[in-house]
Image (cartoon, rainbow, N blue to C red; front, side):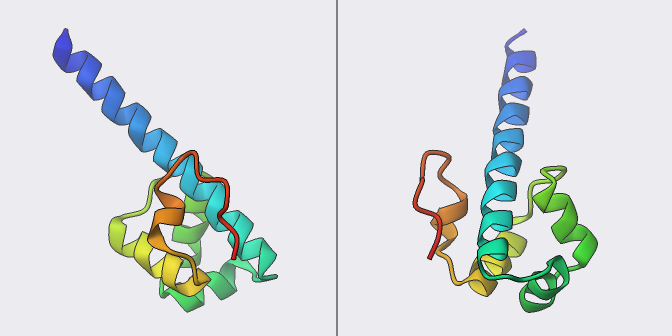
Length: 89
């Protein structure tokens, strides 16, 4: 039973990360007036990958998150703290 609980907790953390990242990436991208294609190009990732991230359908790998943070000019921590409210630069 403990294993099932641990799996559920891990899944919930992944879903929370995907939700936080999706909102922050979209917000920062829109504030810059960039299209999905523009941010994907600047971050060196596929448009479909970025679309899935922004839709909260997948949590990005750490290297992808780093590329997005760099392209957006935001510290990596911006995407990792659920309670962080100051995520615009």
